[in-house]
Structures are given as structure tokens and as C-alpha cells.
Amino acid sequence: MTRRIGAAVQHRFRSRMAGLSLIELMISITLGLMILSGVAIVFTNTSAARNEVERTSRQIENGRYAIEVLSDELRLAGFFGELNVAGVSAPGAMPTNQCSVTTTDWQDTAGQLSWIRLHVQGWANGTGFDQTTCALQNHKAGTDILLVRRVRTCAAGSSGCAAAISGRGYLQVSLCATEPGNVTHKLGNLGSTTFDLTKKDCSTAADLRRYFVHIYYISTDNGAGVTVPTLKQIEMDGSSWVTTPLVEGIEELKVEYGVDTNTDGAPDSYVATPASLADWTNVVAVQVHLLARNLEASPGYTDTKTYTLGGTTFTPGGSFRRHVYSSLVRLNNPSGRQDRP
Image 1: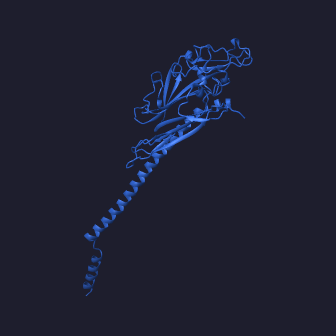
Image 2 (image 1 turned 90 degrees about the vertical axis):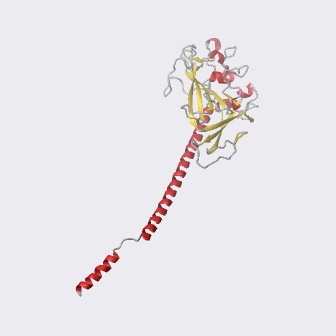
Image 3 (image 1 turned 135 degrees about the vertical axis):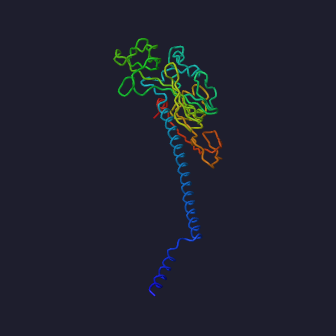
């Protein structure tokens, strides 16, 4: 009797310990796959969103940095230290060889260094720019070109400022009331120009300030073999020009110039190209427009927007996300010289 009862208990125990049936196993596998698929979809979507945010963040950073670089440069346009620029005669005509490194080209027939009166120059759509002399690297057709002239805000060799280097351009301004020949200033390359002007005591050599000519334009490559629109700068360095890629992803550049027609220091109109030499010397504000794009295309996205930069519209298309950045900059130096209380 005991044996029979033990056998029955053992039989029931074995029945309870039996494994999953095939149907239960298949249902479990199916549910697991559904959960894994959901997790994979969430991960993929999150990863794609994160990548898109990173692309857009880079574009915003690049666009803001580019507009800041140009704005900072323009705020210094026309700075020539102690020089009374109003006393310098304007050139007889707009320079056509604006990239000349020959110092005699910077002077008029009276020896006055008159190109400095043209604190900014610009070429709408690049039309009329001396591409041969300046040798812009792969300038993107249809984009504007901007030139800025100024000197360094610190004197060469002073604290925190590099010492004067032979072969580079410098401006020296006389502060001596009895300077021989009544020469007010000299501009040229160190080593080929005699810088002998003095300070107020008429004996101590006057300071030298590095002379800058910067040209900004849009290139179709980044200078490293990658085809991506890039804001570039060329800088006059003695007898040559040095190209520096600044910001990738800048696709368009349009510039408008605020011209002061009644010499009160405030712009009276904004134009893409000032009509005359006198208008160029009276540019007191500049409005810069940039179109920046992502460096990488966005999968599944098509850009159908039309962008307006100043008076020009663009519908670039493609799969890149874009944004317009604009900045209105007062040219403190030329406008301040004409400002009326």
C-alpha cells in the first residue's frame, strides 16, 4: 500500500516538472522578438535624431562663428592708429589691382598713401575682382567678395604684440609738429621703406603698426581636398598672399554697404555696390548675410526652402539643412570721424 501511494506521488511530481510545450516556446520567442524589434526601432530613431541634432548644432556653431569673424573684422575697418585719415587725399580712381604688393601702387602722385581711404571694398557676385593678381582658390561663382584695410591695434614690439618683421607691411605716423617735409605718415614694407618719422619729442622713433589687407570669399573646397563650401581669408604678407580656410559649410555670402551721403556719420542708404569712389570712402556700415548648411546630408530630407540674403534669393535644394545668418555692423572708425553730436 505504501509503495502504491509513493508511486502516485512520484507520478504527480514528474507531471508538474514537465518542460514548456512547443506552442508555449514559440509564443515566448515571438514575444521576445517583438520586444527586441521595438527596442531596435527606438534605438535607431534615437540615434538618427541625435545625429541630426549634432549636424544642426555644428551648422549653428559654424554660422555664428563666421558672422562673428566678419563682424569683428569690420569693426576694425579703417583703423589707422594716430593718423588723421581725413587729411589723406582719396585716390583718383578705384584701384583695379587691389591685390598689388607693390607699395608705390598704394600712393597717389603726391606721395600720399591714399588707398587707406578705401577702408572697405566689395565685389557683388565677384564681378570685376582681380582674380589673376589675387589668385583666390576656387572662388564659388556668384558669391560676393569683401576686402578690409586696417592696421593692428597694438604697436609692433609692445607688450603682447609681435615685433616688426622684415618684408611685412607697416604704417608709421608722425606726431612731431616740425617733421621735415611735413610728412605725416609712411606705409610700406619693412626693409624697403625708410621708417624715420618721430613722436612728439621729434627725436624718438614713432611706432610701427602692422598693415593688414584681408579679403574674404566663399570657396568650393576646404583647402584640404574636400569639396565643401568654405569661408576663406587671404591676407597680404609682405610680397605674397596667404590663404586661410576659416569656416566650413558657409555656402553663400552677400554684402550690403551703408553709405553716408550727408557726412553725418549715419548711413542714408544700403546698396550692393556703391556707385562712386566718393561713396566707397563714405561707407559707414556694412550688413553681412551668410547662408550656412550642414556638413553632411540629412537622410530622407529635401530642402525646398527659398532663402533671402539681402536682396537676393536662393533655392539651393538638396538634402542639406540650412540657415541664414545676418549682422549689421557699424564701422566705428570711418563713421566716428564723420559723426555729429
